[in-house]
Image (tube, rainbow, N blue to C red; front, side, top):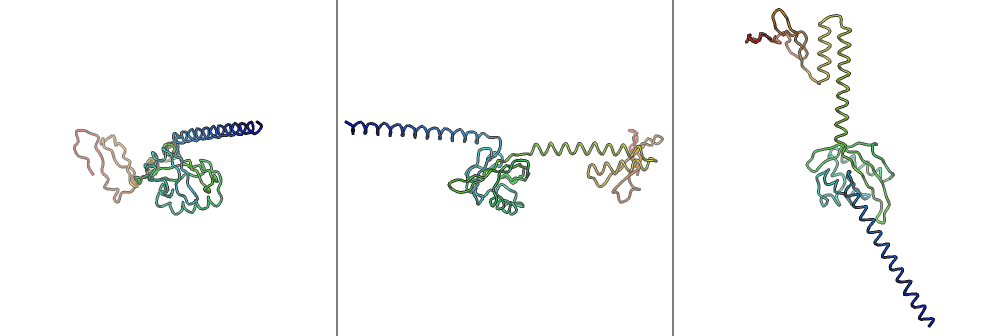
Length: 238
C-alpha cells in the first residue's frame, strides 16, 4: 500500500512538473511572439549582426528603408548597407567596437546609409551588444534622419539669408557713396547664392533704361548691355 501511494505521488509530481514546464514554454513562446511583433512594427530599422558583421536578423522596416528583401540581407556583411567609399573604414570601426563592446546611444554618430538602388540617406544609429550561446551579437537600431537633416539645412539656409540681409543693411548704412553700396550688395548676393557672375542695374530716369552700375565675373564689363523699360522700345542697346 505504501509503495502504491508513493508511486501515485511520483506520478502526480511528474504531472505537475510537466504542466509547469508546458506553461513556461507557452509563456516564453508568447513573450517571444510579442517581442517579435514589437520589433517588426518598430518605426526604425533593427539589425542584429555577429562578430564578423554578418546580419543574423533584420526587421521589416530594414527592408523598407534600404530596399532589400530579408533573404537578400541575412548572412551578408552589414557593409552592404554602407556607401562603397566608406566600407573599408566601417570594417575598421566595427572591429574596434567588437574589441570593446558597449552601449552607444543615438545622436553620437550620424553616418550615411546606402539603399539597394545605390541612393544614399543619412542615418542615426544606436548599438547594443549582447552575449549569446552562439557568441557576441550586436543589435543596431537605425533611424532614417533625412527629414531632420532637410529641416536643419532649411533652418541654416534661412539663418544665412537673414544674416546676409543684416550685412546688406550695414553696407547701406555705412557706405559713403552709391558705387560702394551697390558693389557691396552685389558681393553679398553672389556669396549667398554661390554665384560667380552677376550685375546690378539701376534705372536712369531720363533715358528710362536700366544701366549696369556694378558687376562681377564678366570678362568685359564695358559690354554689359543696358535694358530699356519702355515697352515701345524694341532695342536694348549695348
